[in-house]
Length: 225
Image (cartoon, rainbow, N blue to C red; front, side):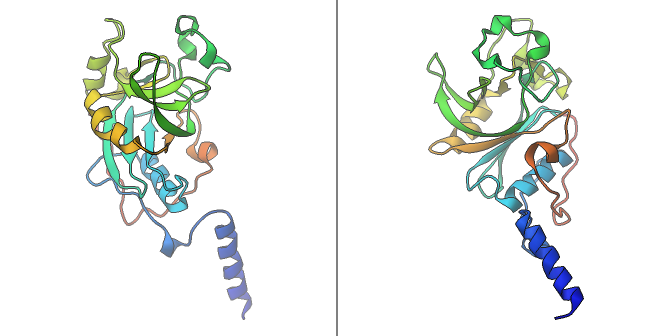
């Protein structure tokens, strides 16, 4: 065997050990005609290629564009919708915030944390179904709530841009029809993985992800809604 061959085999084994599949074997997520950001497309490709979702349905929360996307275990898009997110920009939760009363949480502490979370359906204290994302920080995804009149949550969800979608204490609010039609069925009878993209850090640093060749399906540009 020639030296060049030995080097190429060694490089392949190194990539395999690092969790990266060979280019010919790589898999891709499919968004159909849905417009997504390049960050979402790149993360979804890595999730499917690396099987990081461990055979479970998964959700990607794009905080920058205030968008939630739900995909099945093979990476096929089930549905997408706008979302309301934490008032404050940031990727970390204040330590101990999950044990505090909402009235004590300051404006700058109202973040939706970035990260990978294994989520499941549950009931809140009022018996309403929600998707629990992280118990420690009391972060969940649920149907949009009325909130105070000044918050105008329904109007914010329906607005043309994501600029006014930052209003919650950290939880993720989605349209009622999207929760009932997409989120609840996708997570019924199974856990799922929720990936919340960072907005102050790089996704690779948060998830340990790598770039996957997307030439087979370039992402459609995300247009203002």
